[in-house]
Structures are given as C-alpha cells and as structure tokens.
Length: 332
Image (cartoon, rainbow, N blue to C red; front, side, top):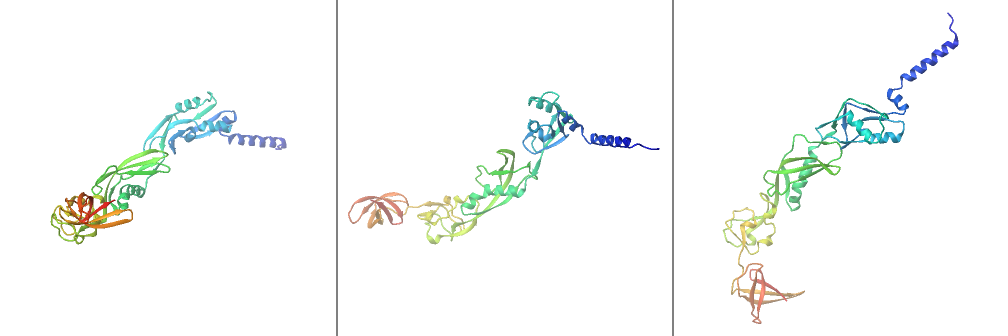
C-alpha cells in the first residue's frame, strides 16, 4: 500500500503539537491565560519570624510586579521552635483578596490545611558555657583571682530558631558564687528574645591574700612579721579579704588567729596607736615644703583620727591627723 508524502507530513506536525501541549502544566496554561497561580505544600518549614505567601510555596504570574506582590503578602508570625501552626486555604484566599487581587485572578492549589513548623538549630553547649563564664567569672578574674566553673547544669538540649544568635547570661544579684546559684540565660535574635532558660552553676576561685604568718592572740597588734601573702582558695568574694598590707597598719586581731588563716576585715579592728602624753613627731607640710618638730599628744587616737597635739618647740596647740604609731601630720 502506498502512503502519500502529505499524509506523513501532517502526522508529524500533529505529533509535535501533541508533545508540546503535553509538556505544558495546568499552572503554566493558567498563567498564559492571565491567571496567577499559588501552589502550597501540605507542610512548610519557616525560616523567619514572619510568614509571607512566598514562604509557603511557589508563586507564578505573568508580570514580575504581580509575582512580587503575591509573594510579599503577610500571613502573620511563624510558630516558635517545637510548636506548629495551621493555616487554612481560606485564610490564604482572604489574605490575597485583602491585598487587592480581584476574585478569580489568582488560583490557589493547596490542601485544605497547611502545617507550619519553625526551622530550628541546636545551640552548642560550648557557646552557652562561654557566655555563662563571661557573666560569672570576669569580675572575679579582673579583681586578681583565678576563677573557673566547677559546676554547670545545662538543659539536655537547647533549641532555637535557625539563624545568628546572641547568647546573654546573667547571675542577677548573687552574693555567694561559691555555692550553687542560678544563672539566667536569654537567646536573642533580630533584637528580641527567642528563648529563656535557667542553669545551675558554681564557681571555684583562688587569689593571693594576706594570712597569719603565725598564731596570733586576740587584741595583739599586727606587725610586719605577723602576716604574709599566700594564694588561698576563696570562700567569699575577694573584697572580704585583706590583700593590701597598708590596711593592717594600726590594726589588731579581734580574736585568736591560726597560722595560715586568711585575714578578713571582720577579724581585725583598729587600735589606739597614740595615747595622751605620748611623744610624737609632728610633720607639717605646705606644698613641697615639709617640716618636722617634736610634740606631745593631748588625746588618744587611731590611724586617721584627728587629735590635739602640742608643739614642744613653740608651745602651740595644733589639730593633727594620726598617721602611724608616734606620728601625726598637719597641713598649713
């Protein structure tokens, strides 16, 4: 049987047309007719705090501006990490209508309910520890101590929304960091707190402090040979301890002190170093000029007290500040 060439040519053209139409999706055909198409999946992972229509799926439109307008339509906030949010297809339709799109110009291809989850990340425990160390140890270390965390009880896992995080920790008004205490941790993202939790911490610190160089009896004046510097494990904040030998001038122990015991402000007291009738050296100073004369105390005083003294050379009575045992100062 003989087949004419025109018949073969027509068959070829028909096949090509069928192939072309079969590769065109219904959405593309709809767009070609001037409709915009929004195709949404049944489950969506949100990457940001706020949801837009463009986050939920694919938007197709003939014009670029129309596509951008549709993608930017707001659908509220994404759920927190670990939570879910459901958005009904009708809610999407209402949002599209509210954005000014006429009925019938946008076709929505989606299930009746869309489930929204938030993209999450596991927060590295090392980063949490670093922030807590900064909040609890920096002040101690800056004061001259060497401090470290001996205990840190963090949650088994800490999840936060995906994206850059700012970890902030605070110990509040804790006075004793050497016993277990609570640290407050906040995770910030884009200027707001996205997660809060508490952790339990405990600190150990060592610092050079003054200690009794030998056994010291109560009410005995502390001399240079009575104390020495030694590194001790702190049991209280460093400001409770004596670290400057100058603070011990004119001081005595309130109670007996054992050898090696740390000297604290509460275990010492100032003692009278000048009594009425004592011979004293009077140092008078005016600018760079300094004079020294002998005098006699007319009252008792501790270091820093103002007492009356007599200039034995001129006989004048003067008000002077007790500087040390047998030494007073005046300014003129």
